[in-house]
Length: 254
Image 1 (tube, one colour):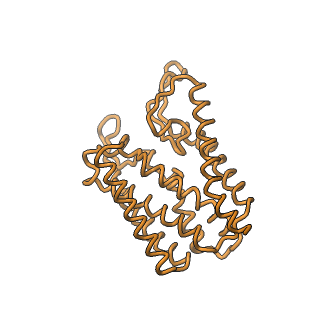
Image 2 (image 1 turned 90 degrees about the horizontal axis):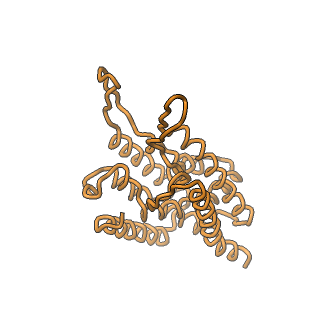
Image 3 (image 1 turned 45 degrees about the horizontal axis):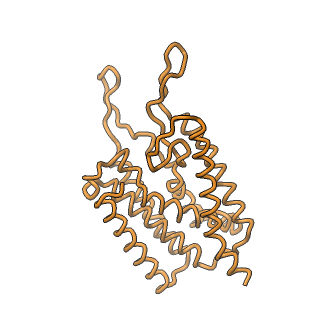
């Protein structure tokens, strides 16, 4: 992270976001039209991701080789779960539920995508920094998250949501529920090592929702370090989501 190549990708994302947001305000398409384009980007993004990370891995005895996708690439991150949500709000006829889902997507798309662009985990887990412009996963990661930022701005500017405090409360509740559930998922998909029935090591965990490890790579060696991290993470989520909602709630009030 924060290498020359990373900063170039950040600049590319800023340019893409600025260009498409400017185009949105110039053309003023409906939110449904924007979502149609986003569906196409989502499909292309997942195809690129799957076929760029799938690997042939031998069995323990080496007799068989299987295609395998590592569990950290499963679509269970905050930004990945936007894919089914985008398809849902694009095609559902349930107006009330659509509005509630869009109200959640606005801050989660914006904050999640900005965090992913500024702190891309792929440079620590999947793509060496020197391959930042030759590996398909890098293009998939940055372009997809740039699309989420544009979508979040379009949702906020579309005028199709009657912003209310209940949307803020529901968004925070969903975020904390997803974070809590990720504790189970991260443990379920981890690779523990047992000796004589006792847990002695964990060699891998997917870190969905960043609830197991911080994206900055700061080491946590005691349980209270992790508790403190969760408190800080929760406080950051509450503060940033509230900041994003405040201007929309004030605009509605006026």
